[in-house]
Figure 1 (cartoon, rainbow, N blue to C red):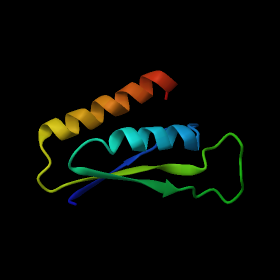
Figure 2 (cartoon, one colour; figure 1 turned 30 degrees about the vertical axis):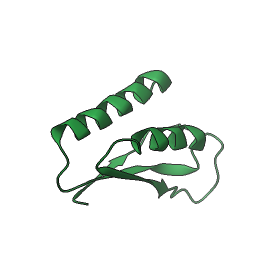
Figure 3 (cartoon, rainbow, N blue to C red; figure 1 turned 90 degrees about the vertical axis):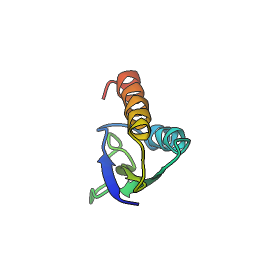
Figure 4 (cartoon, rainbow, N blue to C red; figure 1 turned 45 degrees about the horizontal axis):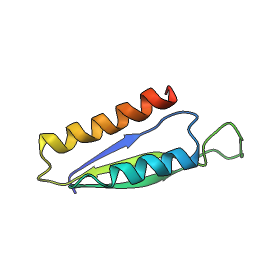
Amino acid sequence: METREKIVFAGLSLAVYREIAAHLSTVTGIEVGFIPQDQQEFDYNQSQVGGLWIDYAKNSSPQTKAWVRQILAYYQHRYGV
């Protein structure tokens, strides 16, 4: 993998992050994972993860990045983040 991108949507639950990761994993040429939460104290208003990382393959096409942007835009619109 060549390029790593960090995605953070403040206030999203773990379940929504998992849904986004599952949706993104259908895109060929990327890998998706979770960024650990770095808060020292548990807060019910914060997610249990810090965000997502997306790794793009060295030979990722512009279409791959466009699909990722469309998926992320969908969730931003749906959850207002």
